[in-house]
Amino acid sequence: MVILFVLPLIAVALLCAPFLICAKRVKAGKSAKPAFIGNLCTFAGAMLTGFIVSVGRVVAYAAEQGSAASTVSTGAGLAYLAAALSVGLSCVGSGIAVAAGAPAAIGATSEDPKNFVKALIFVVLGEGIALYGLLISILIVNNLGA
Image 1 (cartoon, rainbow, N blue to C red):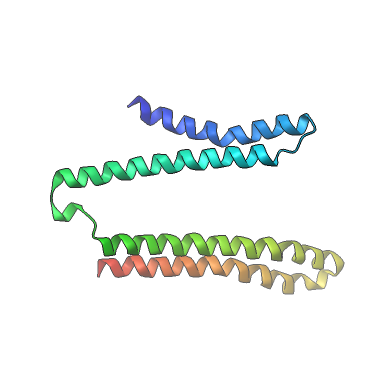
Image 2 (image 1 turned 180 degrees about the vertical axis):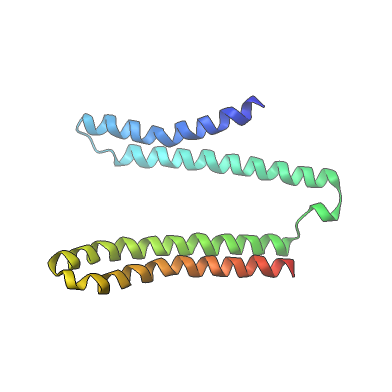
């Protein structure tokens, strides 16, 4: 039970470590990019390992039970994966679109305040990509029950 308390603390420490190391490097006048990338990769690896261990425990538990009702079929698993990918990738695309559109919208608005509505439309179109991905994932998960 102690491990359930310690693992989140380790995750938070791994998440904060890049910022502390980067602050030290910037204070010393060095580039913080290599330390930041290395520490984030370490954090991602630790989180992936934790995910794999937890999935392994679920699969082992389902195998111990031996009932077909407690296991998920391959098709259903791929459908859940497709739903997760549709949300995740659409949100990444939306983030890229907003990251490009929002600064341009702010610049256009600062030059001429009349351009605010036109600029806002382009930012909202980027946000719509994430909503489409969420809609597709909801449709995929709803079709699993039918």
